[in-house]
Image (cartoon, rainbow over all chains, first blue to last red; front, side):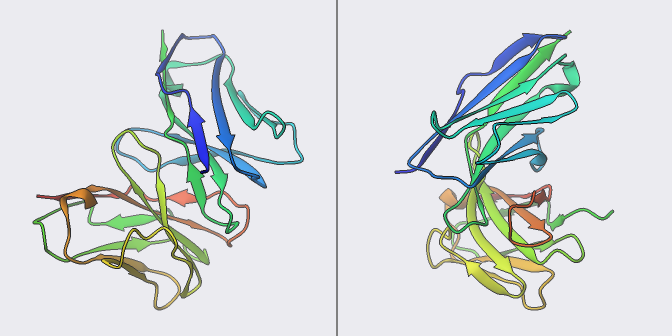
Length: 112
Length: 114
C-alpha cells in the first residue's frame, strides 16, 4: 500500500540552526511533492512545490530536495526562528493527479 | 478577506443526526477539495470538484457522506446519521484549476459527535 512517512517525533532546535525534516514514501510515483505549514487550529499553508524532474528548490530560507531514487524529500529551514515553530506537512499528488496525500506531519519547535 | 472560508467553525451534534458543513472558496477557483483531519494526523482526502461536478469522490468513507457544488463556487459537505468516529476537523481547499497548483486551505470546521 502507499505510504508517506515523516519524522514521527517532534524536532527541537535552537534558534539560528538549520532544521531538516524528512519525508519518505513507498509505492508511489509522484509527479510532484508539496510542503505545507500548519499552525494549531488553522488550515495548512502552502510553502513549496517540487516536481519529479527537479532536484532542488529554494525560497528565501527554505530549501526542498527531491530524490525519486531514494523516494525521499528533505525540507530545510536555515537560520531558524521561533516563528518557524509549527507542524510541517509533506504531500504527494494522488494517482488522480489532483488531490493530495499527506503525511502525518512533523512538529518543529525552535527555541531562543 | 479573499481567502477560503468555512462555516461553522465548530459544530457539536449527537450521534445519528445530520450535519452540513459549508465552504466558500476563493473567487474564480474552479477546483475545490474536501479533506478530513483527525488529531495527530495529516489531512485525508475526501472529494474533489472541478466546477460543479465531483471529479473524484474516492475518498468518501461511505455513503453517509455526500458533497455538492451546484453553482461551481460554494460547496456543502453533508453527513447523514453521524457517528462518533466522524469527529474530526473538516478542511476545505481551493485552487485555480485542478493541476499541480498549490491549494489554499480554509480554517476548517471542527465536528464533534457526542
